[in-house]
Length: 400
Ligand SMILES: [Zn+2]
Image (spheres, rainbow, N blue to C red):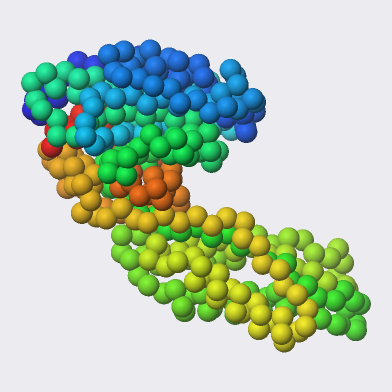
């Protein structure tokens, strides 16, 4: 079967390059970033899915071209359960144009690379999965797949997924027994399968004091905030100190970050201090427990000074990890080993990907691709070899 997949995918190589180039030119920037959305790109992709069972599940968005944000769900072969490859149609804007050596929305093929915005994030995966689908539709003439195989192309991944994955999950398109691969992160060797993400908690603290002349200080909001934040910092690190080696760093992080400007002059005691904390918590902990500790320390300071501290949760997102022995991880490991001869390992990350929405819904999801790692950067490119090699791995997944 490996030889057959090699032959099929290598036969697709030139078509894959052409497709990847066209995708770059169909600029699909979200209306949130002043773009027109994904409609034209989606229509082009849909045309490449002839022979598959294709459905569109568009989300309404008046700001976008056509008034919609398109989402495509294509079944290559149906099954009692499905294995889905989920990639995203939208791209981030080009950023500072001066940093680009070639026009960002004009594809340039050079030295085995394709340059252009979206080349790697996430067009490489769009192309790999489409041609893996084409390979699978050939393979099923001879071999019996042991799971259904489907492709999903979503909008709005870069700006919250409200019109994309979240829309599809609300419509109940997926079964909880389905398996999902999200090819939206990965390393150069293609030997890291992301199965877990730290929970993200963003907090804003408004610490009150009494504004006064510096020579006759009353309650200094600056000092009060420093005391409060240091106490919080220390306690959170002590209480939530578990280690999990699949993550880098392997522990939860609690970082005081942004601090708003207070008074204009040196001789005024600030009456207000506004600061922020970015917390990345290992998935074994419940964010409610973290918030409880924040509340406890806050009440102690409020009681001590008789002046309020306001705590605002700006973002709280967590998802259960996909078990390392989950079927989707096992299939990926086996396919990577078979095609590449590489032993892949499970890892966790500190950020959130759209895999978290599937995991919150109870679907086992693995994030995997072979990436150079230049998403969102100027002169973004993908390696043509990665695009073709990933297609081979995807094509083997429903048979392994
Ligand atoms: Zn992406």
